[in-house]
Length: 477
Image (cartoon, rainbow, N blue to C red):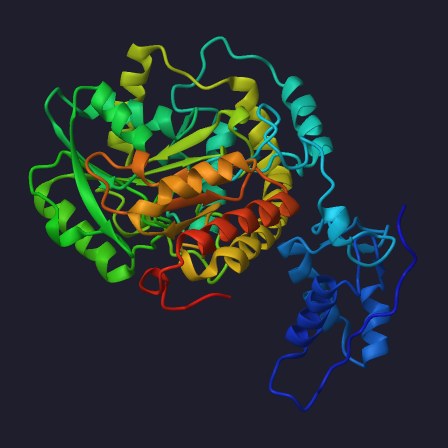
């Protein structure tokens, strides 16, 4: 049930240096974060609030529009403006849930339903907050469209057009529908590229540590895997060999260390690709979720001739959807499409139509805005518990807790005994491990379980790292 309209803790300072729109938006946002405005609270109309504050209606309208775009507000024309349900622990009846209430949970809320454990391993998104009504509407609308006897090898034209617009808007990718091929996800896109371009014995660079599925896919097509070391910023470009056929990289949020490849190094990587003739395969796997600054534009936008961009809905929506994309220059895309025909590979037509409809109606964008807020809260909980050790926490759905090698097995085993699953960096290496620590995911566990699980890990860390020389420079929280 919706709450009655509430009084707002908002005032404006006309003499201040901060624009009025920003003042109104910041104060409303702070009130929602602090619990003064709770989920379901109805806000005054833009006209009423403008009259109350003594500002133009445009000021309030623009502030509301920004909060709508960020996912803080919801409503329909004529029915009012309400605080969205973005904080599960804030109830419309008022106030925050108690810590005791946070400890009460069901398997579907936070624990892995198969194991009954708190799963803090990376790679899985939260799928319970999606707008089921929007999903059903998209499926019904997709069902009204005729089936195709000859599926388009490049993908549904409606989805290619919608995805191109989405990528231009969200990732500054200069692509049109003719540059997009619809895949079943990142793995499918990698395999299509490998099947099209690689010969047995071709050398392929993969970040070290990095996404092990990429290594398996390339090796499965006969490639020789060349580990390419990374540092805190991402792949180390200056040491790249000159005989690679292609290199796989995650520049927006290196997996698993979390580095963000800076612009100067991006330019050096592209210069290397142009000089060697290698293809750069950019995996944009979780670039939608950034918490400090706007994401850097995709690497593809700097050089579409030497970069292929891969994306997926597995992290932003659900792995069950099975839709991704491959963005490349049209001649290369044509080669991939021809190879795809030979492999009898295709993406489900009805699923493509449903995703196109969600994009066209704005449902997917609204979902992404809500989940940015939700994941930001979980990320804050991880950093609050593990802050001295965390790296790569400004984006994505996981962080790296870099630790001395000898304590990692003890912490993993101790966490497992206490009902918490965590990953390590070991399995993400091709050769001997260079980076040691925990890879802590916060995508698939509920907020209270993230807090509880990270608290357990922190206790184990405090016990394992009792020697002063092992403690990080930031010290304990």
